Every structure is written in C-alpha cells, then in structure tokens.
Image (cartoon, rainbow, N blue to C red; front, side, top):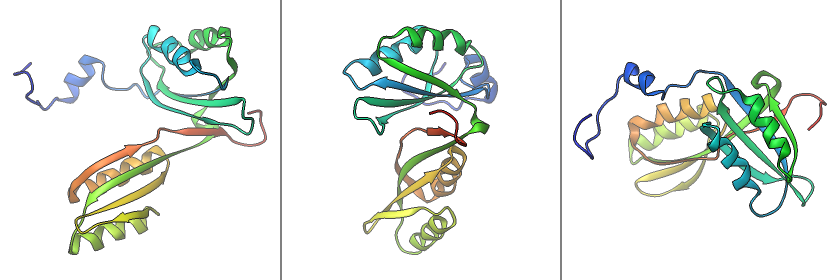
Length: 185
C-alpha cells in the first residue's frame, strides 16, 4: 500500500485478491413489508450481520398505503441467500419475499448525470442523449443534466460514453424490478 490519501491504480488481480470483484451470481430480492418506522433498518442489518454487501437498495410505496416494497440487489455467490431469506421471514414486519430471477423479471434504474458541455461538445452530448433515449432536464452555460432510465447495462454504457466530456456528478437510484407475466407479486 502507498501513502495515506494517495490514490493508487489497482490491477484486476489486486481487486480479486481483496474480494472486490463480483462473482456474477446476481440476486434481486423483492420484499413486501409493513410501512412502519425501523423496518428498513431491521432488514438491512440482517444482511450486514451475515456479511452480504447490498449492491442497490430501493424502497417505495405500493398500491396499499400500509405496505412498502424493498428491492435489494446483491451478489449472492459467496454466501447462501436461502438462510437470509428464512431469517427475513421471521421478522415481524416482513410480509412476503421473492428472489426474482434476472431472466424472469423486468428491472430498471434511473440515473442523472451532470456533464460538462459547452460549445461543440454540447451537440455531441445531445446526440448521445438521442441514441440512449435520455432526457435533458437542465441546461446551463457550462453543463447539461441528463436523465437516463433503463437497464444497468444501459446506464453504465451511457456513463462510459459521457465520461470523456467531463462527468461532473452522477446519481443512481438502484434497480427496481417486477416479475414478468401474471405471476404473484
């Protein structure tokens, strides 16, 4: 390791040795919970105690004001997900849990990007927005704020393409997902 506060470029081998590379076994958990204070803390702390790292977390209301949906995506290859879901079922405020198969679900994410764009660069960024079906939501003399909705791959591809222009700031919501077809919620 180098000096404190000095950023070093890490190789893929360094990341794999440190356990920072994901295994690719993605889980999308859709959890219906009672809409009460402290429920989210109890759910997320259960994952933390078991050594899981949550990749994305999204919480929102459902059609019933008394019920919220928590959508959690995580890499579950290193730890068995079954044990955690059994323990989640034991929590008083948890009503239902589904481990959605990525191929059996439709998932989307929302992201906003503030990109440096003035003069000729602005036209190029606008072209990228058209290609990715992104929406320009704010324009100043030196920057553009863009909204992109889509799959994680689409969001990441858009990010790769706008980075060379100067990515000032980025915000991502995390994935939300719903099962395909007429199955249960």
